[in-house]
Structures are given as C-alpha cells and as structure tokens.
Image 1 (spheres, rainbow, N blue to C red):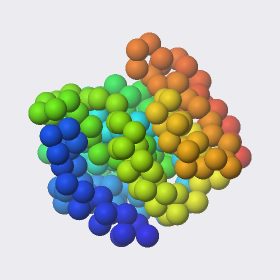
Image 2 (image 1 turned 135 degrees about the vertical axis):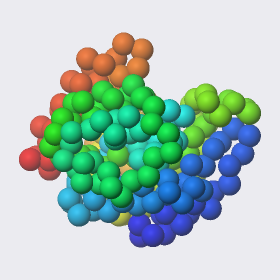
Image 3 (image 1 turned 90 degrees about the horizontal axis):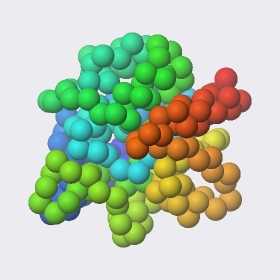
Length: 204
C-alpha cells in the first residue's frame, strides 16, 4: 500500500494554485524513508495537519518538518534517517520547530500527515500559503484513506480545524482529538494538546 500511495502522490500534476512537491524524486524518497521508519516503529497515533507550507513540508516532503528542524534535530529517529534524507534548502518553519523541540531526543513520533498533502498557494505565488478548498480536501481524503490503511492508527488527532473537518468526514465512527495550531499565539495550547497525545496508552 505504501508503494501505491507514493506512486499516486508522484503523479499528481501541479497547477497555478497547487504545487506537488512529490513530483521530485528526492522529496518523494524522503517521505518513503520517513514512513518506512513509522511502519517499523509501529506508530499508532495519527496527527493530521492542514497542508504543507512553503517553508516546510513543500521542501522536505515530510509533514511537520523543515530543513532546519531536520538538520538541527536531536531526536534519535531523525538522526538515524538523516543520511537517507536529501535536502536542497534548509530554512526554519515555526510549527516544525515547535513540534520537534517538544519531541526532544526520543519521544515516539506520531504518524504525521496533512488533510491535503500538496502545497496550496496563492495563484502564481509559490512562496505563499493558503487554506485548501473543499475540492482539495475531498481529493486529500483519498490519500488520507491510504495512510489509514497503511498504519491502522488507534488514535487520531487533528492539528487545527481544517484537519478536524477532514477526519470527521472520513472517520465518522472514530473519536477525533483536537489540538490547537501553534500559529498566532497558540504555542502554549499546542504543547498542551500534543502532550495529551503522549498520554495515550497506544504511545506508552
């Protein structure tokens, strides 16, 4: 199933308002390496964000990361993966920095993904971010379904309201936890929310 997901991601065409970072073989391989690690570590908690940002996942291919977060990490997982990851640009991204600072050196890593896995941007402006629209979230649910099939998570958390809406639509029978996004002064609530993830029995 992972190979199918990667192939589907790679074939999605970019447009004037969506950039497919996974059309780049190195970036696609970064995600492959990361997901293979999560499969091996038997991660069972899924954390869903909104969409890749132009400073973070669009450049790395790995949700909730940035080049700087990967380069400067002390977490044993990323330290192990760094030799297999290729980065063409290393710049900081706020959410990634906050999350990996919280994870420290060895906290278990949740399955990290986005409601829309490609980078939505303002028309013709690659270095910008925008919220994915309804059609894009519907498209994203197809990839989210595949991620669910790969990992079969026991617990599901949404980072921000966009991720929450997508999760509730796709998994109406599941209990969806909500975590405040760290942007616009939400860092404290974000840390409190992520801390709850690590109180889940499936991560102990």
